[in-house]
Amino acid sequence: MNLKIKLLFTDRIGLVADTSAVIAGRGLNIVCMEVVRKNNEARVYVEVEAAEDDLDKEKFFSLFRSIDELVQIKQIRFLPNEEKTNRFRTVLDNMSDGVISVDRDGTVTTTNRIVREMLDCDEDGVVGKPVRELDVPHENLLGCLEGGKADNVKQSLITRKGRYRYISTCKPIRDAGGRVIGAVEIVRDMQEVKKMARSISEASPADFSDIVGKNRAVTEAIAFAQKIAGTDMSVSIYGASGTGKELFARAIHAAGKRPGRFVPVNCAALPENLLESELFGYEGGAFTGGRKEGKAGLFEIAENGTVFLDEVAEMPLSCQAKLLRVIQERAVRRIGGTKEIAVNARIITATNRNLDRQVEKKRFRQDLYYRINVLFLHIPPLGQRTDDIPLLADHFLFRLAGKLEKRVPELTNAALDRLRSHDWPGNVRELKNVIERAAFLSENGTIDADAVFFSHELHPALPERRGNGSGGKSSIKEQVAEFESGIIRDALRKNGSIRKAARALAISHVGLMKKMEKYGIEVERLVTNGKY
Image (cartoon, rainbow, N blue to C red):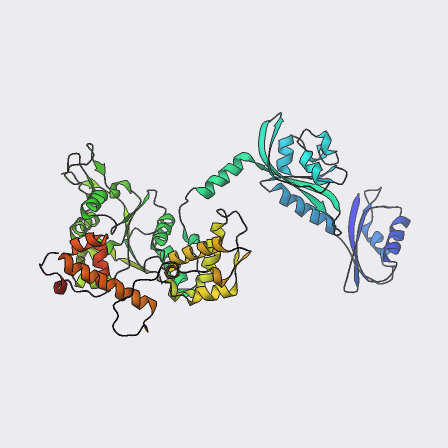
């Protein structure tokens, strides 16, 4: 039988010799012995082999009590190195990659479960054998014994179980003095590599873990969104452009476990007639240019899923009336159709406008407002959560790693200070652009303040504004606003209507109205012929 014991001594010279003498005097073999010295104590771990199975442990232990400075003796299950080896082997065998190592002579010292499955043998059939005798490609592994290395080399292996195609990386193992004492090879199945590449390159559903931030307002918004995700009630998300309203909407949809699709639509980006046909669909022959067979609307496409109406405040009043009917009746009627089609889609809306004010101005239906504003979620602008800038910057740099052919740089404190000092009118979307631009412009392993450029610093200077006598004391933001406001006022005076002015300025009708509201431009005072 084998017996493993631990002896604790006050450290002194001769402990190992005295312990060995006691064991040898009892006629026992020492299988293994380990000594650990720390804080004036010595721990001696011993595994002994006895010929008889009925070794009297108490009598055996009493032999050691005659050794000077003995503090404690007890039986143990594992020696320290044995326990470390077991843990190491458990880790290796649970890896998804294959691992094989050799010593300085090219003899196999370690394998894991993946490699043994590839070779169709157990550990005894591999460990201790020269790697040259194994039917595996070994040139790169042995080349590492001479100080070389091999990264991501395509290999092929044919065994009784079939053909394996894998990616191999080999590196030398060195001691503290830098001398090569062995080599290790990491093997990754080619199919797994392809799956990983696809998972990175393909868009995956967003969830709440994709929302980065520790700011209290953000964490409270996330907590509330998680709480309401499992309901079917309508959600209204408010936040400035670029704050991540769609990301929140996608996360709510994913956490809600609705089996249908997430269908987003930007209400401000589509003309009125096109928005209506996209949302509600149309029958064949409903209008010129449509499909002969007709087309399903987004509410039909999102059956058992979620329709995300971004910039809902820009939706024309005629579409608002139809949307209200969809919410009330849970059914849609296609353009040109007579049949009611039942739909079951959750509605999430988003806007950067004050819907209460829009209702007061008769630009948004009050009854629809109460229908969509059941659960309200506010996302703070980046300017109110500057403490999240380092986290967001690191997040964007990590995502950029796959695009750059160099190590992703780190932000210096000076660069972070410059980022914190900006007012971020474009919010998180603007920060993402600034970080990616800085990463591409940086020449070394860091991003310093001189690599951080904001959008207004990259464009040529605006033409001299028709100032108000301020002598240039206004901020850049104020000067740009005044200049843009002047252009809009001139266009309205010259063209006589909002639609004509929008065409002249090459922007949408809705976009021009948003800018007019932003600058407080009154239509009645500028449009001379009463056309809207």
